[in-house]
Image 1 (spheres, rainbow, N blue to C red):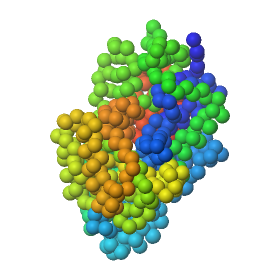
Image 2: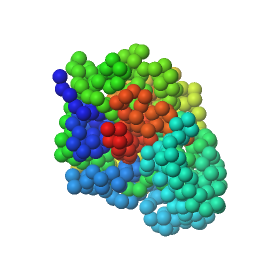
Image 3: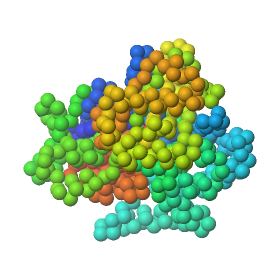
Image 4: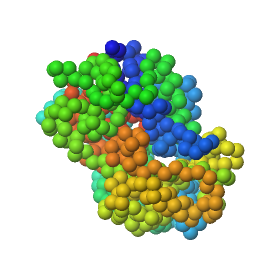
Length: 514
């Protein structure tokens, strides 16, 4: 029977990050991955003969540069642009604006649409620059202990320091941040901008993966978190990150096993971690386990009934994570353009009214026929993903419910694919005739393929009550009430997306526990 210092469940980017940091300290680490390939949601896959994606998710702007440096990923082939990628906001009347890392260049482009919005964009980024130190300090460090019943002097010092950073903004900026954080993103941007499609495009990241529309309270904080955290992009996309992480993990002597599905986490008679049992019955021993799967998958599916205390079971079950994202991958037999431009990243939305109308059916377990889209054309920078002269289009389709009244079937997914093509046709006329292959993944498919509870791409909703004490207060510092069990996935602070941050912070928490 094999024995390790720690077993990491899941070979996605967070699991590999945790394993690598621990392996570098000399710990004997095993990564077990259910699928045949590593990467989880960051894994590139062939979806049509000769056409490949770079991962389910395609935004790598939140990958932490300090983690890249710490793990020396660039020495292992990772190529990083230390600026965000250009993103083109598309309008259904043929207009478009490209949001660039250069604020002045973006403001100049916006001026062609609206001079008032050009001025507003500069002011918007001035505000973001002022608050970024506070936001990033909160999201780039382990969560503070806010349990007043167990507040140590060290925790109190951390809280005081964070308060001083907030106070350091100055009264005007501090009060503005406190005012706008609870607002809906529609009200926040309506106060600043006048052009509907620009407002919708800027707001879109606040709603991605959320059970929310633009008039949902607290959606502004999601936008601010995304804007402040987005600082770079990975060339070759998420798969490029996974390739580098795999190399550095192997160099750190981390053992990796694919096609190794964990059936249950084992406890000893004292209720502490003993190891894991794989599907098929093999037991692997370890005094510690770090789970990068969703909190609900970890606690509700990987333990025997009655292993957990009722209170822990109860609160984990209350974590909200209603998936609202589908994925459509397109194989195109030409170089694709949108609104007459060659673009790599693009967003649709057009107006807050359209975005809210797309969200409305979700509440009733129905599917909109006009979803808003987050579009990536990875072949713009990586043409090897398709035959010469062809394109791959990776589309995250938002406001698509996991709980669909009609049920997800071949026919309902075919209808969703047609609706996405109909929407894309507005921005790329004639696209339908160029499609040679299409893959449609409903939220239910995402759950089945990636073990995402209810198909939620972030392992749980990004709303204020599920951010700082993520996933629940008892597990918010990566350790759990079960001795030896740690959480290292997107369900932990600071949340989902391709960032490596939960995996890194969890590893540091595990090392401190030794």
